[in-house]
Length: 533
Image 1 (cartoon, rainbow, N blue to C red):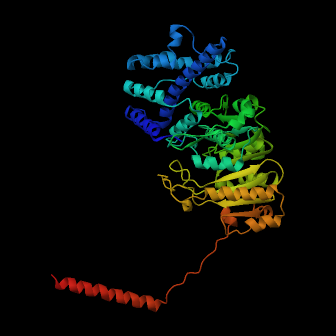
Image 2 (image 1 turned 90 degrees about the vertical axis):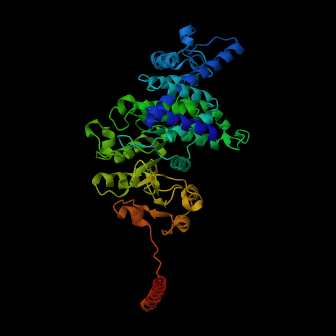
Image 3 (image 1 turned 180 degrees about the vertical axis):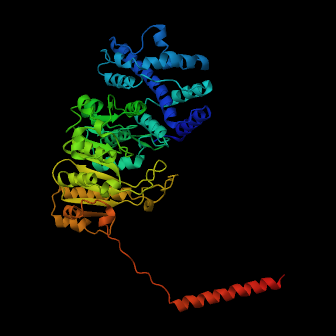
């Protein structure tokens, strides 16, 4: 968590960007990212220099030793005047970002090289990085704020970036928008990724699912000694028990695909700031047929866990769509194609948590029914959490649900949860609500854990029915045969039973007498008022 002063500094800087003419929140985040990136490069160089001084060994520098090369370092250009600073960043520093991939290929820093590798990966998406801060005073303020940020602490770095991303308030042209952090956390906790697995988001955007998965792993895999508490009593999880998996985490665990280069820059930085060096953030439309050529290994039977809130707006061109996905579901609708693509990318036994619009659950078209039949008959549709329609405001008011499924096998029953409240108001303001009554998420996670324990223990079906057979409750199970009999309809309202309470009314004559008495009192008061005039 961030302290108040850091949040206040970011808010002040955000306001300066706004008054300085940069009003697109994604542009603001991108510009701050570039500056954080420049400072992190210099921090990495300082670490390497200190190590070289201790060991006496040489190393390959990120920055040339010439005076021009050293002026590319944060510590050497941060104190330039506004005019000089603007020119230097635009013509020298930012163009240098694009060369980092070549720099990181050199040997040196081998034991700490994963960070350099990560910076090199980001450099690939910095080819068109540009300084869009025209106002020199805004630029100087931005440099000062970034210089004050505690970027040496990986958990705080992640929180800083999460706070910046929370300011995104507009949906993209393809229907993508930021998934609320608490919804992401619930999906991750219910999927429970392990440190030896491969995790993917096929439409990663700002890499929220991947970054928060790393935070979840740190939380779950920290010893008592690895949980640190700061002066404000906030706990920080170091993930010290993850050390045996560190190389896998840095290079093989996290995969994200997107075809928006701005998002790729932001998500690459997000992963680095969350302590993941070398995450595979890749330029690719996951639904496009080119994925079979560009990433043949990852296109099929590769991932253990997929977490996604894919864009579900409009339709796409079938001629450019992966034909193997179209074989599973013949449609132009992206929400159906993404679920089919995710099924294909999962390895046998791999599991997924995916946000879908409600139409996927009950749509009557052949493609809708075909996909639901595939999920039920040829895979294990484990659970469905129905979300209230205001969860994604102010971006969209569409009703959605989270699908939890495992690749392979067949479905015996589906666990449903009717989530009415997520802890925030369901209007555009999304104000946090106090008290347990306004948040069903803790109960949903607890009920899911209880259900999964019963399933994994291979208890008799009667035990599961006893625990979750009451369809008037928020959490209940439905037999797969009932779903098949209903044309694979997965709408929660199809199976949830509503209990109607009989309302007792007074006799009409009693009500009428009360109205007459009230009328007499009003007339008496009016007469008294009139006599006073």
